[in-house]
Length: 383
Image 1 (tube, one colour):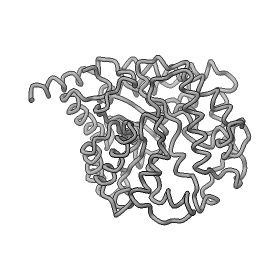
Image 2 (cartoon, one colour):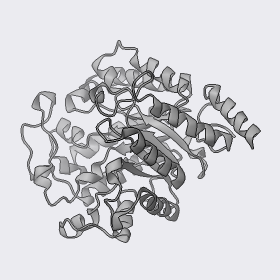
Image 3 (cartoon, one colour):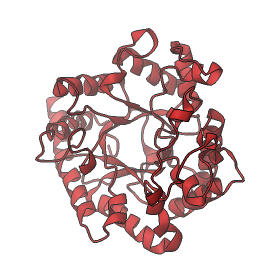
């Protein structure tokens, strides 16, 4: 057993020499800890001469990180102008992300519509137009998905396509008028929001369906993720009666499935220290993850903790992080992505990078991946 561990560790230390498997080949018992490299593409939109993208993937490979989730678009409407005005130039920048990942053997999970208000704002519609299959919003989404999938579907580092980021956390809220998307007119948003910018579970379902149908026109095998966050602890009762009653475990599982339909091969959730003891029966991490993993097995999905981490603002940060990452490991979650790698905007909170004061988090990821490799279970390496 010890010799097998050493062989696995040596394989991992070789710099992920084998290319990541195509997502369709990910076995149901594989495991991997990766990172969120949130702005690896959007930073190129801001400064196309920067070498930050290439340098970052070299560092990730050296840190034995097998995959990265990233925002595969701009965050604000004005950051998508290049796509509208010079599509070839836009994708030449995206090509750099894929090429850097391929050169370093790091898998990618691109999230196509990270900020759910960006596309409606860009085309001049209220956000709820995600729920209208004949809207300009969904027409733009179909075109963007088509362009993206046809260009990258054969990349050896493509692990999954993701719809967006946590759109499910804004549906059917009793106080939706207070939580409408932020406005920054100089970045391309409208000056103010209306009730038309409040979304429902029905809008979400339409957006998901369009995403699946469009991807599958061109790629029938790659895994899909909704990018959903952990359903709000009262999501079922929000939808049912616009109340703040905390959901039962059964109701939680119902919403988990609704926010991660079966045709998405990955069941997505995001988890942080503050989520413990907030759900049904003051659930521990173990109880919460058991419910999630059980639901995924029932629906035939792999489990993707698309975000996890502990901010510098969390008391006893290292202890909180260790508790969370060990609970994820023990739960059997397939993929988990640390929030967040090299993100200057969160330098005081979540930012993690080699040589920084939280570089130990990368060491912990590497150690768990070495254990999975030794057992022949590390996602992305040929066994």
